[in-house]
Image 1: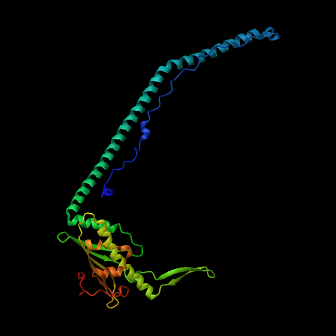
Image 2: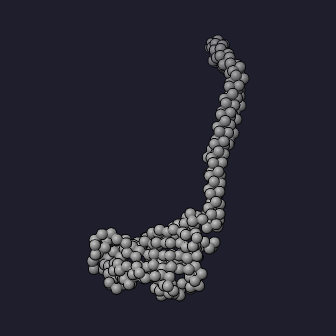
Image 3: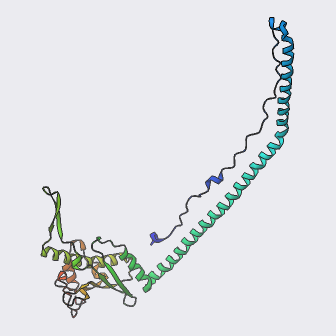
Length: 313
C-alpha cells in the first residue's frame, strides 16, 4: 500500500530570473577638460609675408572655438549631479519593481506548493481511511481493492477481459464474473511467410482444431489466473473464497440475438487453492479438481450445464 501514498512534487521556481539584483549603473563621468592649443607660428618666409597677421587671426578663431568647447564642457560637468541622481532613481525604481515582482512570484509559488501539499495530504488521508476499511473488511473498500488488482492485470491487446464483481463480507466471498472475447474475435492466422516471387506476406491459417484448442486453453488459463491474482494479492485475507464465472456475449447462432454464454463456473477456497503449484498444473485438470462446471466446447459456444454444482469437490 505504500506505493499508493502520494508525495507532492513541486516544480522549480519559474521566476528565478527575478532573484538577480538589478545591475547598478556605471557611474557618470565628465570627459576630459578641453585644453587650448594655440596654432603654431609661421616660420621662415611665411612669417615675413604677412604670416604674423594671419597667425593672430588663427589664434583668435582658435580661442573663440575653445571658449565654446569649454563652455559646453562646463555645462556637461554642471549637469552631471542631476544626471547621476536620475540614474540612481531609475535604478531604484527598477530594483523596487524587481523585488515587488519577486515577492509576488514567491508568494504565488508558495501558495501553489501549499495547495499541492494539501491535495497530497487529503489523498493520503483518504487512502488511510480506505486502508482501514480494507483491514476491517468493508465491502466498498474490498471491492475497490479488487478493481485495482484486476485493473493492473495485463492481457494481450486482442484478448481484453472485463470484470464484474461483488463482495459478501459475512461469507468473505467474492462473486466474480469475467467476460472474455467471443470465439469470432480470435485471430485465424498461424504464421506469415514472405513469398519471394510475389514480394508478399502470405498467411497460413490455423486449422479448426487449432482454433478450438487455442480458445479453450485461453478460457482455462484466464480462470486460474484470476483466482491466483486475487488470492495472492490479498495479504489481509479478506477473501476466503471466490465464486468465478467466465462468459462471453455474442450473437447466438440459434436465435441471431445477443446472448451470454457461460463457459466456466467454479468456486475456489483460499486455503485449498493456496496449496496448488500452478507452475506444474494442467488448467483443465485443476478446474475439474475444484469441481468446476466447464463447457464441453467454448469455441462452439456450448454453455455449461446450469444444473451442475461447483462446490462438489
